[in-house]
Image 1 (cartoon, helix red, strand yellow):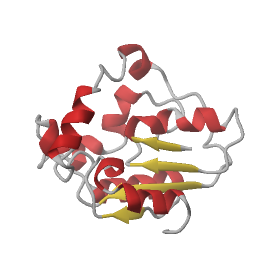
Image 2 (tube, one colour):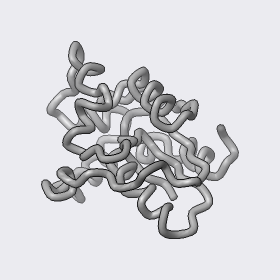
Image 3 (cartoon, helix red, strand yellow):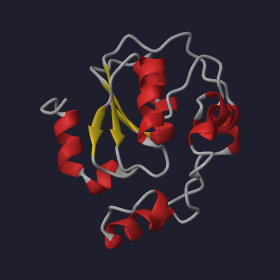
Length: 156
């Protein structure tokens, strides 16, 4: 199962209930027990990590800077209000991360979640060393072949 960003709150819930061979988190917002997504921005260290270099309000700068403009526009056209206020207020319910092999992928050019922050998050919360790709936050759109190689186990 592959989960991007906020999907790291949901994917382990699925893996705890259904057979999953592996979790692959792409720039994942890795939660800890009882933490809400609203709290994550502070408790994860994110607020401190971007204090001196906050992300731009322009999504083409923050999320899509290395994605072909046409592809980025298509992605933006399919956008929705995400996530819902109800979803961001719910504490993460698992006692521990599911017993499933987990790979963490980070984009070294991510302007939303800086690489040093994600490296620390993966180490502290998952005890894994991330796979690093020279990409933005939207790795699947900017480096689809490279991400597919990670998901397929050919690149780790």
